[in-house]
Length: 382
Ligand SMILES: Cc1ncc(C[n+]2csc(CCOP(=O)(O)OP(=O)(O)O)c2C)c(N)n1
Image: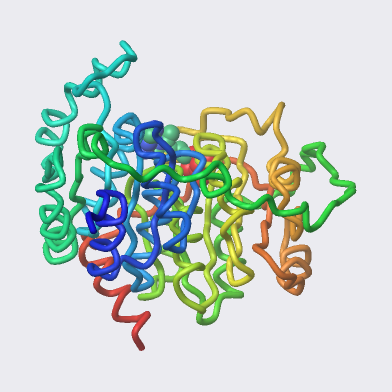
């Protein structure tokens, strides 16, 4: 009996030992996506860039993820491919529903869609075009290439591939089961940002946090936070981010999903406002071995302390709460931090650390991204 391309593709992913798939839908790939939902541990994303962070964490944790997105999502993730996956030499096969080139009826899909091969080439990302069922074996080679050569490999799936398919999932197969709101909540959060004048700087906050760290993985986010972390307490279990602003929490989520060790993320207010989707993902996929420290100096500290809107408009703890994260705390000093670190519920923990602006005068992290990765992976294996 003839096997349709959707089922063959699932079979190929299984043969290639793909163990989870991060997804964001495309109309043209919806039948295949329904099968992915049924057959794999799926990570349903709210923004593609977040998926790159989560998959990076999963790869570091020893898992073998793939992604399934539309080519527009590649556009959202250029920075994260270039300044995370490529520089740290991380693998990821990305199945891309390729719009704009074959019988496209939506005009706006054409402009970016037609430029995708050139964009990938400019980025130095290898790609494989899959137009017909006969091309499907190329998917195996592309996945092997990604994992053997530690590279992102884009697999461009033309809508032509699905054209002759007889597979058509029912609406029930397409929609995931609705989960009851497991934890309805009424909470009081103190959301006014009081400035008392005795706040620590970020450096002081990281010093306190690292004073309490034992065997945790610690992720330092991009810019001066990573440099301060290095200066305060360098250790192999620290993962220093040197780019891909906004992905510290997603990387932590991937690490928390893929292994059992405690994961602490040192994130920033600017980074969380740049990618608040990280909080949605934190609620949906973060586990109880994950703590996010939102070190809120109300500034883009690393770029000269320009004010961020957390000074006047947004309270990050309230934002985390409204995303359904229940274990949240607001801290300013050692005693409050100690208290927050005692509370270990089920689900991820969010510690909103209010600090003053200011950067310590510390040098660059003197390690290359592959050195950071290799040292980190060796420490994880110990
Ligand atoms: C997409 C992107 N935009 C801008 C930058 C430049 N940049 C690097 S660090 C940083 C500030 C981050 O602020 P925050 O997350 O609050 O951390 P802080 O440095 O204040 O601790 C900015 C704007 C970048 N790296 N990436």
